[in-house]
Length: 464
Image 1 (cartoon, one colour):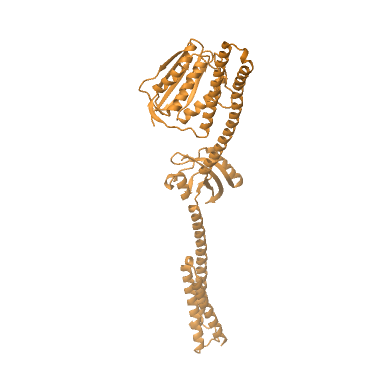
Image 2: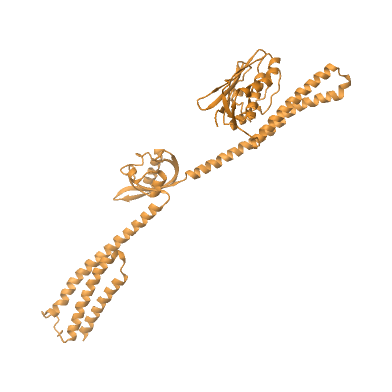
């Protein structure tokens, strides 16, 4: 009776084991689980057969007697134990391989779905092993492009020394973090990246996995903020200089103007008609100068605030130059200066007529102011190869030294000086003309030699 119970117990354990293997098997070990299930079912069946035999009256008092009924369980134990061992080894191996495969799939999923550029390369020479989709999207290189290539051979690093810096750090510490460097994309454009890398071993050979975040947009934003801050700083400096110019340039003419009016108010009864006429002429000259200074200051202020209306149109340049020269003919005649105009009749410009007249008029006025008696002033213009028109006002006047010439268009440098007949300066004049020309899409510059004369050039577009 005891043998029968033991045999049934072993059979039951075998069937329960087979049932649990089937119940808890997973997809990745399904094959080996089925194999072990069959082994335990067979083993359970053998002992169930023995239990039935014992229950049918088969003698079990001599368990070592050479009968098939006794031999069969021993044969089952020998064969089944070997098959269990083999099956469990296969199942364990399959489970380990499955976990490795899952880890690899998880890694590849993270590797490929990262928006950053990730590559695996050989540490010694930078030979590519793999790259993710982020790398191909950011750099433009496909996996076919990098096959059998190194990061150096495809000219990925804008500065190859940066890679050596990463490699040295990897060798020393095993990792590198947050190197800001510049890479060259497949189309030749540059991108700024933030690189982090770590050393890994593949088949016993040192490799590195590096992740690069594209921060080109962020760098552009930083540069834009920096530029805006510089512009704000310059505007504040210009504002301070503006108030300084107002205080300096208006004070002296007003002192002269107030002195003359005081003289008239206090000494008018004792003054002769000739003296009164001289004072009146001086007042007119002072008032004219004050008006010019205020006009320049107000125009420059309006330019900076964006209040100046520009209406660029295509028009001939010669009439604008002639009108400006005509306004200065009387002043030039009084100083004995010859005024010439060499501009082709068919020369066209695309600009605002008022802006160009203002520049011409004041450049010619300055040339007359700083040219001695008997001098020559020439206004000329020509087309250039860049679809621009280059105009020039050349004089044979007193010229400028290098220091004054280098700082002529700078707001923070005092360029005021009197003309050859003591004519006063007009403060912001050249700064205003520079802004007008740049707003028109051109440039203004000058060449000068002290004692020889000056040439002021400016360009404007010839077409929209």
